[in-house]
Amino acid sequence: MCGMSQQRPDRSTPNRPAARPDASMSLLTNVMDHSLDDGYAEAAARKSEAGVRGLPRTLRAKLGLAAGLVLAALVVTVGAAQARISAPTLAKERTELINRIQKGTGEADRQQQRVDALRDDVSRMQREALKQHGGGKAELLALLAGSTQATGPGVKLVVDDAKGAESGGGGPRESSDFSDTGRVRDRDMQRVVNGLWASGAEAISVNGQRLTSLSAIRAAGDAILVDNKPLVPPYTVLAVGDGQRLSTAFQDSADGQYLHILQENYGVRARISAESELTLPPAPSLIVRTAKPKAGAAKPDGADTGKGTS
Image 1 (cartoon, rainbow, N blue to C red):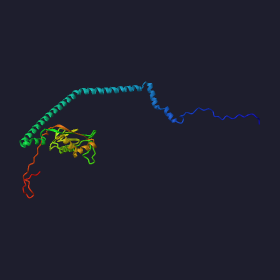
Image 2 (tube, one colour):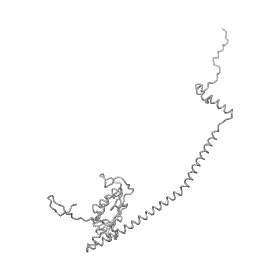
Image 3 (tube, rainbow, N blue to C red):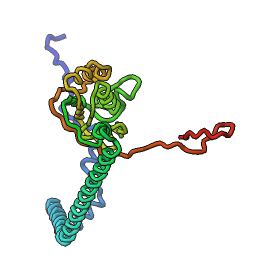
Image 4 (spheres, rainbow, N blue to C red):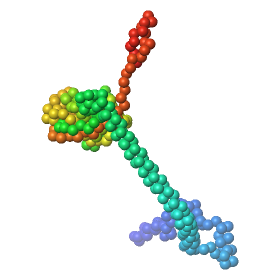
């Protein structure tokens, strides 16, 4: 065996072209490369050869925008023309409505003046009747009946809702759990007025409304009514009497303590002051009701007692 070196066989593979990354997605590649169907391609080619071409997209968009602007301008123009045509009619109707309102307001004012004049006449006749039949006590009877103006010293009590009080719902004097909305209720004003009467007041008014023995303080929704006239807060109560003594007596009474509790626990605002001179207006014309015995009321045995029945 000779010592010549033997050449090693070359086992390397020949250079091959690199495979495409999307070789395994031949179907998707075919769809992407041939997105247009052959039939559509042939139709497009025929149109191109015949010189028929579609408008560019930008031109179509501009034409559509122009058409929209023309339509909008047409609508605005028609609307303006209609408004211009109907403007005189609307102005005429508005003027007529204003005239009707002013006429109705004037008529209501005249009727109110007539009612006030009639009330004054009735009050005057009542005072004359009291003088004729009341003897020396006519002025006292007129004062107690509220048919005449009351002047003298007294107290001024202002009661107002709590700050931020909301309407609606129950109230501290209307529910068993004493929940509160901070609003002054009709029952509060009833207790305040009754407390002033009990403390020695000779005459009382609430927001200029004179109270009498026939007066009623009620509620209608969230409003307080005095003799069926609605009042709005703050409620100003004027009471004629011995000013300082009346103020002290009221604050020491149960009703005065009740008002103090409303201030401390529910935010109701109240302030009282003694005044050297107060003037209370007379009450509106009073309806005097009298009771008369009714003849014919008999006992169970048939005897006539001569007593009336209600």
